[in-house]
Image (cartoon, rainbow, N blue to C red; front, side, top):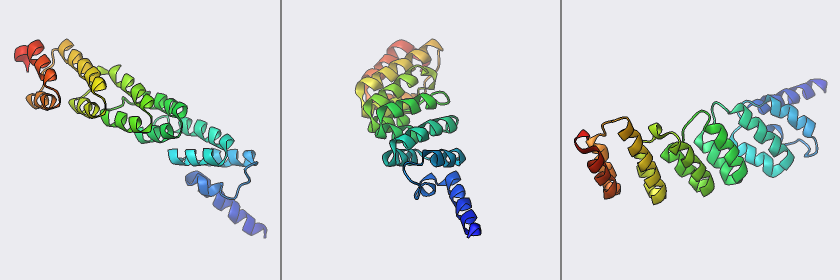
Length: 196
């Protein structure tokens, strides 16, 4: 009998490392101490698991959020941020703050975040605008499909960064920008003249 218990405990701990939801499936909702022990073993928790834990038990969910943000600091993705933002804007913003410590959101990352919550996408846009050297033509075009004003802000930051560093923009990029908005091409032509 004791041998069977050891096997079950071992299995639960193995699940806790990789599949936290399975590990806590039979756990009593009031057994927070046991949950903390299993959570400490987890190394692969996903954002959707954090949300599921919160939906099952808000106290456990709050603990899972803290653990997730701490453990995923170096590997958090835009998908994680969007998943947590869909669940709760405040949690999504906290996840975004962790994300921008290691990455600058791209246009496609911002698009995912906008679909979660527009305020989350706007905060991601601010992070992109704060790093104009990271803005690409693709980012501008993606933002153009989301919000014309946001695309204009990104274009102006991109333009000023390239003008300030006297960078050459590729003809194909001017064509792509022109297809999105002829005012952008005109600005390049007027300000950069022969440097295109």
